[in-house]
Length: 125
Image 1 (spheres, rainbow, N blue to C red):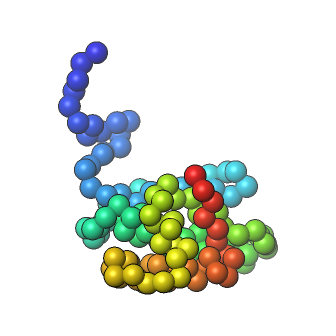
Image 2: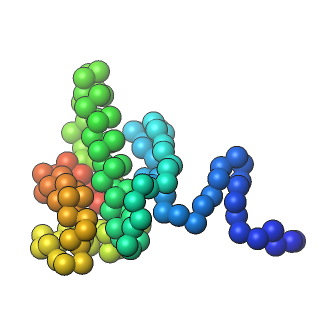
């Protein structure tokens, strides 16, 4: 074995040391869409980066659900949004706005609203 240094590319994918959004969309166990891109802002913490990814993924999922609804596919189940960052999940469920979460206020409010309306659920990973 030989150490080739930090991972730069693998199977045509470029890997950078910057925060990425990624959170693939499945319906009935089938992959519908996936996305990986560099975030356009610098996150102050991993929880903030996860939160931004969660909010953007939820927006895309809600759009896709509306599209499927227009096509006649009705889903009554809540959207299962998976997040492996415990701090981001805790902030989502916390009804109190803290100083340390002030910079993700809009994303936190959006996700909290959908959690309260039972549109989305955050299962433990």
